[in-house]
Length: 360
Image 1 (cartoon, one colour):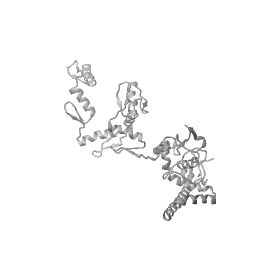
Image 2: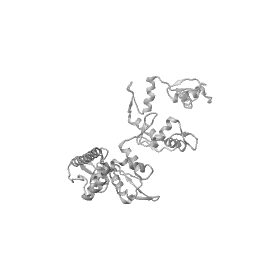
Image 3: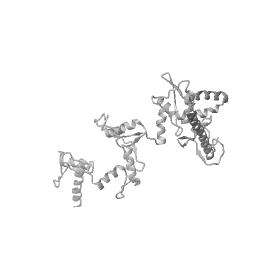
Image 4: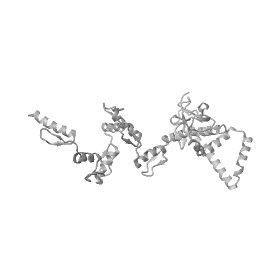
């Protein structure tokens, strides 16, 4: 079946949108399945587009259902007959005997999704015989795959796999899906109390806190150096193994970390996205900009613990200690007796003497 047509009205040539795109707080497909007794999955062989006219009709239907529910809630609260709701609901089901009443329960259930979150936080999504149909409808609102073959038995309990309708990725539980959806919505509910940085997962915030606490629980088995994050330890281990997994596509150079590669590529492209507000000078990385801002502020945050000299860069402090306070063996030039602590400077100095002799 051709995919260049509206999945709802089947008209072609209209302005079409992807049916799995976010539309408000959920995807168009989720909203359709909450109203109609149909299933819409990615790559199911049917059209994955919907026209603008059908989207407008869908919005009007949802608005009407919401209006009905809000009005009913207000009336019941005013007349104080909430205790008889269940009896009235049972009677209406017997009189109408109409399957479409599931539409209201679906939307009401979506509002109560927080109740299911308490179950999901314990691990897998636990489903008993009485709740299967209700939770399947709830999953349809979230864009989840609800096929029976996705129900597995774990420790005597039924668990259900969940599918993201945005990218199609299948997750092991509803809790896993909930955290995964934040990669699409950009939601970052976990905030650092020290610096205000936000994270999508509590575990990421926990690891970030090590920056403020100074905790470094990860140790290199080769040299014993400690790290706060596993990524830092993995990159450090490549120093010992010599592994350079990141290759530049513009030249033969290879790098130990993806950050070093990105910095190198920007040297090729000339990309400088970080601009100084004071002088307009642009830099490749944010850290380069922060280092430059010390020139304008006059700050010298790096202090020598021996003599108290203040310097702007950590590399300058390291060089100062090596040259001034270190007992490192001095390298003496055989031509002029000049002394050096840095091997590179010593080699460059000797080359000057050699070049001078060659000219003579």
